[in-house]
Structure formats: C-alpha cells, structure tokens
Length: 147
Image 1: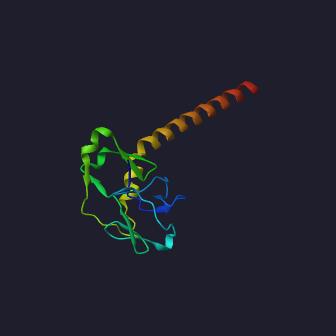
Image 2 (image 1 turned 30 degrees about the horizontal axis):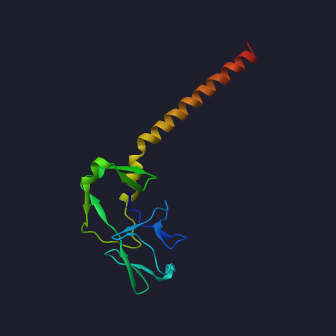
Image 3 (image 1 turned 60 degrees about the horizontal axis):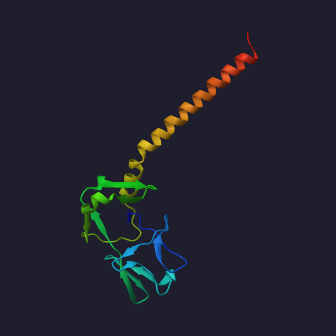
C-alpha cells in the first residue's frame, strides 16, 4: 500500500477516486473507491472520510497513522510506503478528521527532508563531473596553444 498526506484527488476514466499526483487509487473500507456518478460536482467527502456521490454513500476513506513515522520510506516527495517487516507500525482508525482546503506543512517537509541525502549525492556527482570537464578543457587548450 502507498500512503500520503496529500489530500488532492481526482476521478479517473473508470470513475475511480485516485491520487492526483500518482494516479494510485484511494482506498476505502471496502477497497478501491468507485463512484456511481463520476460527476465531480456531486462528490462530497465529510470530515469523517465518508464519500458521497450526491446523496448516496459510496464508502469511507481508509485513514491510518503510524507508531513511528521514521519507518516510512518516501518517494515522489508526498507519498510513502512501509516495508513489510514494519506492518505492525500501522495504527488503524486514528482520531483524525479530513479537512478540505487546508494545507499542512508536514506534507512537504517530511517528503523533501527524506530526499536530502539523494539530492546531495546528485549535486556532489554533478560537481565532480563539471570539475573533470573543466580540467579536460584546460588541458586541451594548453595542448592546442603551448606557450
């Protein structure tokens, strides 16, 4: 399973509720959430995670938390997964509510902080390549114009 705190979602071509960025399905208590009427104007999600299409209850979004957030592995900055050996870290039905139109700073910070080592390694590698290219160019200029 993939987890996120990025609440942006979309409706795919099959009427399924999916993550806006990864297109992965949002999971409900009954599995993937399919809307009987994929008209986004009729979609309502309550603070408790109940998904409505018009007056019809479709499902309840599966909300979980984790005993130790450091066990989550980040990818694509706002999405996470949990290694199989840490499945006991999942806390089901935590006392949270869904808030529409609210930005939570922790959404971005955890994802980006988790990628700092990778970004630094990429920068260090690029800097070494640039230095090697400059050194090669200097050497070739000296060969072409020995003085």
